Structures are given as C-alpha cells and as structure tokens.
Image (tube, rainbow, N blue to C red):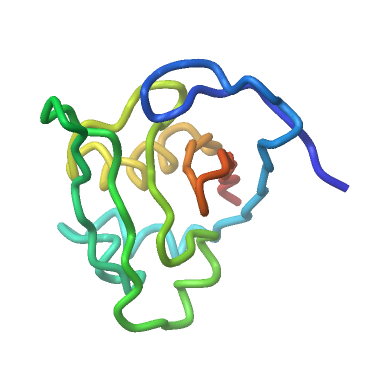
Length: 130
C-alpha cells in the first residue's frame, strides 16, 4: 500500500493529481548518517554525482542525482539514479549546498521530508533517524 501527501512540483505549483505522488519511508541509522554529515560531499559518499538543473530563465529547478558507483549506502538512503531533488521540508532546493544540508537537517530534526521527481512523477522520501 502507498500513502499520498500534498507537495509541490519543481516550479512550486501544487501536484494536481495527488494519487500520482508516491511516498517512501526510509529508516536511517545514526552511524550511517554520521559519516554523511561529516562529509563535504555526502552524495558522493552515496555513489552519486550531482548536477544543478536550470530552466530557460536560468532558475534552479533541482539537483539531479547521477549514479556513479553503487555502494552499501546507495540503497539504504532511498535515492535512485536520475532522481531530481526539488525540495526539503517544503522549501525549494536552490543549490548543491541546500541538497547536502539534508543530512545535517535529518540529524537535528530526527525525521525529514524530501520532495523529488522520479521519471517525471512526484515522490516524497521521508527519512526517520533511529
């Protein structure tokens, strides 16, 4: 079964068909998170290269994840090759720094919602620390 929640697309508009949004729940251990928080390039540790995507007006639309080398943490954190990170806790991601801050925010908040687009479909990844 799937849960559905309201979110925004990468242009800030609400998702029109709430049934199209899939929600994924990911449990993260303190040890796995600590290594990512300490890193200047946490997505690199997860095996991804990040790319900032911009629209025709040069506005950032999200951070694209390109899988370079899968490792044991790649699967644990719920992201996939081609995911476009567009928001964290309802705030649009505008830089690689914003995307990297996901892990520090998770450490302080203990749970965190990240909006992504996967194959053009809105998804939400909810992380739980513990």
